[in-house]
Image 1 (cartoon, helix red, strand yellow):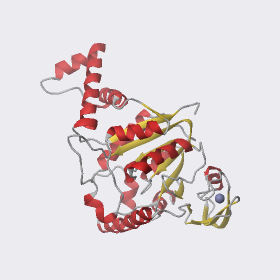
Image 2 (spheres, protein in one colour):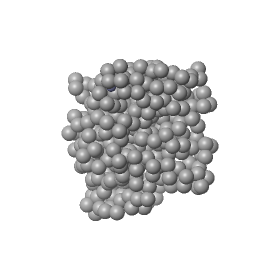
Image 3 (cartoon, rainbow, N blue to C red):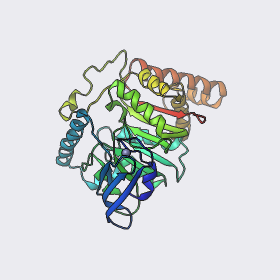
Image 4 (tube, rainbow, N blue to C red):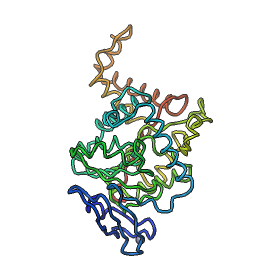
Length: 339
Ligand SMILES: [Zn+2]
């Protein structure tokens, strides 16, 4: 960690903001590698190990079990051939669900005007692949997770930062009680993270993200699994139960309601995605093919036609996200400028 991180921290015991001071034992010219942070208000002392600040203070049992499960999962990954080189390519690998992460990241990077120097929290950073991408765009990044485990936690950050090309902070903390001061971030990004909360902690995490964002700041939540009236997924998480991932699955409206209850302004689900689909379609996809091609081309040339396509996309969005499935949720929410 670097000293500039201290002003963002909040003591997880006494909740005083910017109350930590650092005692460096080993530094490497870029950051403090070994040492402690100490709260001036209550005296709480927490370690800095391998550059990672450990503010995981008295984590509940299920978090301890989830962290242990991630460690077991890292061993499975290692046996499956995951290594430094493959991690450094993320999300651009042709494996499992990574196609979805590529799509989600493209959506974020093409629709959100991220500017160099803005501060972003990567919530549930895991291998820190997104932290790396944001840091490469010049953002000031903090990665948060519940474990340091290599391949499934914050120590994986070394694969990116030891080259000296990028830097980002790594903090062990709880998403529903993050050790950050109020109004510390311009953005919170999370990918496949929020559903690791039970319903009460989902609402709590939303409130905490609202608290740590600056007025006007935005929550960028992508790829959360959804359940649907026509596809209830009662056995969600069963295939990974041995890793105690504390996984849940929610309806679209449950995420939406939790964000609104926390004080966020949330666009009517689907409108933004549909608009993006239309623009994305115009920008990247070759001219329509097939029997309906002339009709589609005709519609796209006219305002009324484009509105029709937009309406169709919104209807399709609702069908895929709220009724039949199967799609994951991208939800962007913003903190009101006055609040
Ligand atoms: Zn304290």
